[in-house]
Each structure stands twice: as structure tokens, then as C-alpha cells.
Image (cartoon, rainbow, N blue to C red):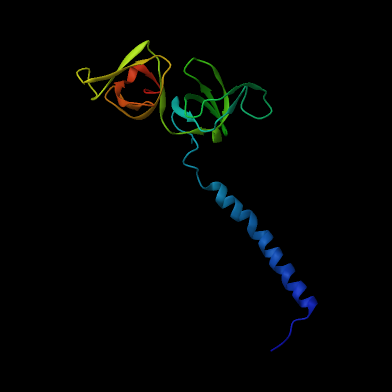
Length: 172
């Protein structure tokens, strides 16, 4: 069997490094092309999303070169996407405040905020459903599903159904 000299080994290592350097950009591009299910994709507008991070920067325009208008600390709270520009989403909160957020800070999970003075949480999706609790304006809820004008929601201590028109985030 033939022995490889140090120069030969160095030559083989250089060839291997060169091959990896050629292959690496394709590997990175393939990983970047895989969609993140938690990030919001371009879809119909307007639509509701939730805040994925503990804290997000709301900017005056679609890009990091735009100044931060304010910082929102409300993980899991709903926002409405009203416009898109590349990876940036123009969003509106339940009080009507607007700004731009990077899509990586948003999730397609559903949530809502009670927008009427008070609404009744019911056991079934019907005005005749057994009342479980009265929920006040500004209360945050996780939305499980909405159907036929009713949303199945989960609050911190209770779950049930409320009319979709009473929760911001329930209807598009």
C-alpha cells in the first residue's frame, strides 16, 4: 500500500475544504427555504396574528433603518396585519395603534381581546347556552376556533363560547 506524504495530505485537505466551501451555500440556502410554521406567511389581508416574542419593536416603517416608535410587551396578544412589505408586516392593535413589525416576531396562533363593555361566556355556541361567566372589556383570550358567529375561547380560569363580534381577533 502506498503511503501519502505530508504534502499529499495537505493537498487532500485543501480539496476537501474547497468542496465543502462550494457545498456550504447550497446547504444554508436549503435550510433558509424551509418555512417556519410559527412565522406568518403572506396570505389574505387583513388577518389576525399574535405576538410571538415577549417584547417587540414597533417601527415607523418596514425595516430596521426606520426608528422604533414604541416597544410592545404583550406575548400572545393579537394584532391585525393590514399590509406587507417583504418580511415586514404593518399591524394594528386592538386600540387602533399601528406600526411595522418583522414577521419573525409574529405567530399564526389565534388570540383575542374582548372589545365590548361585558360579554357572557357560555357553555355552548348559542344565546341559549348556559352562562358560565361575565367577561369585561380588555380581557385577553386564546381563541380555539370560530364558527357561525361564535368563538370558542380560553381565559386564564375559564373556557367556553362568546359571540365572535364581541372579541377583537375573532372575525377577519
